Image (tube, rainbow, N blue to C red):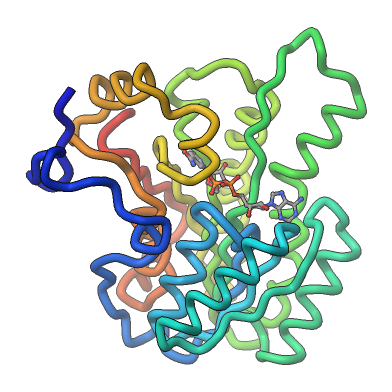
Length: 277
Ligand SMILES: NC(=O)c1ccc[n+]([C@@H]2O[C@H](COP(=O)([O-])OP(=O)(O)OC[C@H]3O[C@@H](n4cnc5c(N)ncnc54)[C@H](O)[C@@H]3O)[C@@H](O)[C@H]2O)c1
């Protein structure tokens, strides 16, 4: 099967390397220089692209993750690329007290957070019959709860500045009607509701709240676990565009949403899926 990316035949262009998929063709948004940016789940996957892109914009970036090796490797790569090193704070986001402490520690070092990218989630597959009350709580903790407490932690600093940007991460999965992960999809639907609610509540303080819905993004986890020939065929059939959605495609939407270029945009959801839904 021949897939294209930006009109370039597959045969002449392979997928970008992991690092290239994080930072490619980035536009510079001058308003992001010096901004304090916090990314959850920034150690790998789409989150690593957010970290790399915001660093490339000249922002002061911190990220929270449990994956130590990947996170340290990312710090090295970003630094080697000539950018200000991002600050990695090892944090389990399902531990609300630890999350609050990490955000406070980062803000004490870097200043109050200007931009929060709520990125982390875990798309573990599960069946309805196997859900227990404990498993329900665990899936909601990793896919929805930490977004609320991260926003709660950064909101006072943003209110004091009279400005701030929150970018939440949903998923096309529930809109497209996928199956096999009902709690993940319920949490992702909830994130859109949370975005709408808090855009209204925080707007008077100059805080913008938007949501990005990624399509099927070629992260290491997706490529390792699920992207086989059948999946490539499905992507080719469902996306309007040929080629693949890469982590940097999501990060570029986030940097634009975080910049002053989108200063009157809030309460919205932006789909980056090559036209899947
Ligand atoms: N990749 C896709 O195709 C896709 C599609 C739709 C939506 N999304 C969404 O995009 C976001 C990023 O997804 P991804 O594909 O990059 O995921 P990923 O699994 O590749 O990376 C997630 C990162 O979050 C970290 N993380 C997970 N649980 C954590 C915890 N409890 N504490 C701290 N860190 C934790 C992981 O270590 C990892 O670095 C998620 O919100 C996901 O739901 C992804």
